[in-house]
Image (cartoon, rainbow, N blue to C red; front, side, top):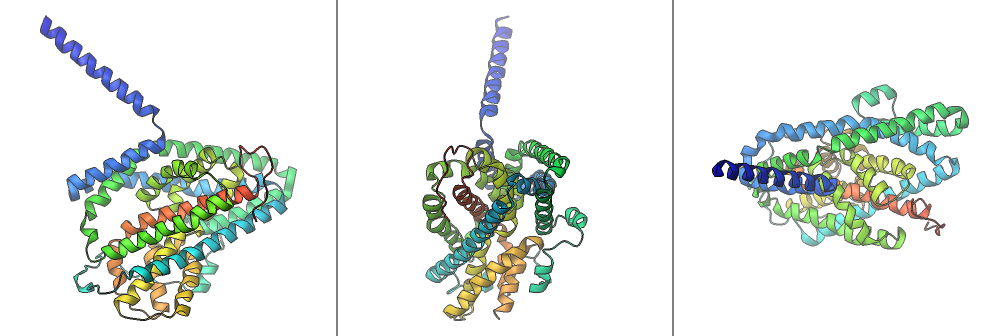
Amino acid sequence: MKLINFYTSRKNLQIHKFRRANIGWKKLGLGTKVFIGFVVGIILGLIFKEKILLIKPVGDIFLTLIKMIVVPLIFFSITSGIFSIGDVQKLKRIGTKTLLYYVITTLLAGGIGIIVANIFKPGEGLDISSIKASSDFQASEIPTLSETILGIFPSNPVQALATGNLMQIIIFSLFLGISITLIGNKAEGLKKLFNEGTEAMYKMTAIVMAFSPIGVAALMACTIGEYGLKIFGPLGKFILVDYVGLISVIIIMYLFMLKFIAKFPLTKFFKSIGKIWVVTASTTSSSGTLPVTISVTKNDYKVKEELAQFTLPIGATMNMNGAVVYYSAAVIFVSQIYGVEMSISQQFLVILMTTLISVGSPGIPGGGIVMTIMLLTTLGLPMEIVGMIAGIYRIIDMGHTTLNVTGDVVSTLCIARSENMYEEDSTPLKKVI
């Protein structure tokens, strides 16, 4: 009898501990849960190595669910964000600032990438014969400049929505939002439809993101399991230089913007930006991270909803600070490998080119690799190395996506300050620009 009581009490104690742990887990914020999943994924990948690829479908399902919500979220949020601003002149002013911030920061990021690559010289003395090219790599057809520009505008918005062409969806949403604004009170029914549609997408986003700790853990486990520490081989210096460039953009440019333009507390910024970073690192998708980006910008940074819904979806498609750092560094990397001296004017041309093509790359499958080929071909540089970079591209793309999205948020905070569009602001602020 005593033995039965002992086992019963022990079982009850275990159940009690499990319930306490479950309650503790539920009390954790989503960002903390995702970070735990991120760390667990890394540990599992290091322990089980390639065997962990058995759980790859779990991560793929999570990515598929995110892709499922991206198109309607962008469509509803941009359209409602535009007519929620109301004043056409204010909309024009915010739109101009958004484009200026995105273009200027992209140019500066490209310059920083060039400088870092010139300082650390990742391609000097590299023996590329020891590097294995990715067997999955295939060069895609490179679009011309006119094709890229023409491809931005939708001839059939329904087709753009069906195929997930984000740039075309954004253009159509901009036109629709402006049209609804100009109609005024006659469009109250449409406004209600889009506002309710936006709320429904936010709710769906919350449901999908509830699975993010598991999805992130699976994605990171498979990434680490597949690559392990072998990435720090012959291409290790390029990977290191790429990340030094990304970190330099944060330190040199973003911190300046936060402190002197956005006048936003750095501690508050870094306290919440980690929630976004763990998702960008695992999904390597600016658009896929958009639900989290909007949520953090609205709820943690207190930016007004209509501004966040306008600037962030546009930034997720055209503001590619991280990608431009990579493009610039990759060109210098290849030129150093083959002993090609690039003049200052040629390097400046690289910065301009990478800024222009960064808008076109999201709509192209494997955009980063295809754009690298386009750059090297235009500059007359050998492109054999691209197949090798493709083998480790996911590792560096984790950093590119993280910087891309961080740039979207920082620019939005700057615009929010200049337009007095923080929820907690009670007094008008001086305009910054």
